[in-house]
Image 1: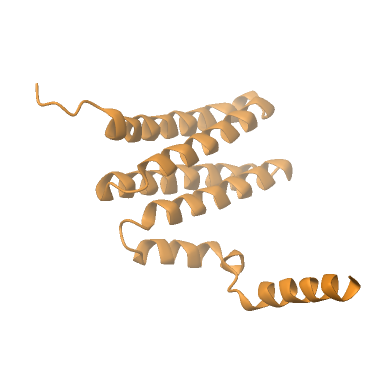
Image 2: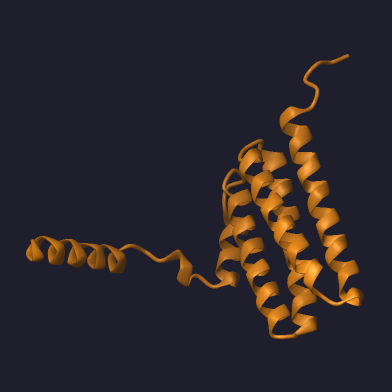
Length: 148
């Protein structure tokens, strides 16, 4: 039994070291890959950038780095917009883009509740923009199909 467990652990470790790690990719590399990707792949890649920026914003907020926090929030909006535009343009990944943008907006709402009052307006503006992107995606998926 020990040999079997040891073999399984060894196999899992070997598989982990052999598989290419996208998590080691810098945000700049991810942005470059998203910019160069096919239109149907761009929504997911841009949303990965937005999610990383959300993590950066959260860390900046916790470290009391206001300027970095604001910059990260702006980047979240920028790359969420890129993802939403790419999804609308390609007609692919509309649902997953909407879901991921909603998740980001929810996290930003949570952050907004915990920051100083004078820092809330830019975060609320970002949330509003994300909700606009979601509305457009939802309209694209479920809007009227008839030509009245």
